[in-house]
Amino acid sequence: IIRMKEHHGVDVNFSAVKNITETHAGRAAELLANEPAIEKKNKQMILEMDGIQEHIKDFLIFSRSSNENVFGFEVFNHWPNIANLNTYGVGDEYPFHVDSNGPGMACDSKLTCILNLSTEPYEGGEFEMFWAGQTILFDQFTPGTVLCFPSFIHHRVGPVTKGKRVTLSTWFIGPMLK
Image (cartoon, rainbow, N blue to C red; front, side, top):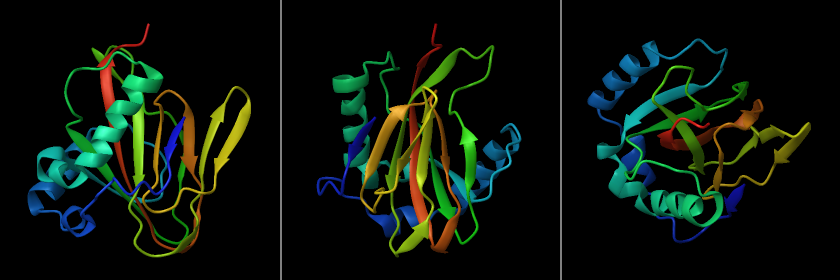
């Protein structure tokens, strides 16, 4: 697990990411309609990268170099084409899940990368992983922090108790894991 804490090199134009066009919203609805049902309580919008890639370039470069220098997953030689903009208000959460594709797919998510874009203080909303029989709590996932980890690790977001938590998630994909 790689964590980049408040790395000043990650220059994200949050207002540009936040002001999503109607095209993105329509595409999000189309993609979400094909998602398997999962009990989640948060507002999620799937974004096409061509609309925001320039604004999150440093995040993407850091994420890709994390794979090259630490994880070494075989990934396709291109940038992710979608990202999720996740907004969690009071009481919102996302239960334990993995970010891998289902059986029969030609490719799989290898590396999940999450950038904390929150612009106001919030409480709760802790990021947790379950690995090797242990729960790992990341309670210092502050704005500007990036987490990169293998997509097959179970992870969740606990309930937000105050304020609003905003994150951007993306995945590097490659051939199915063997």
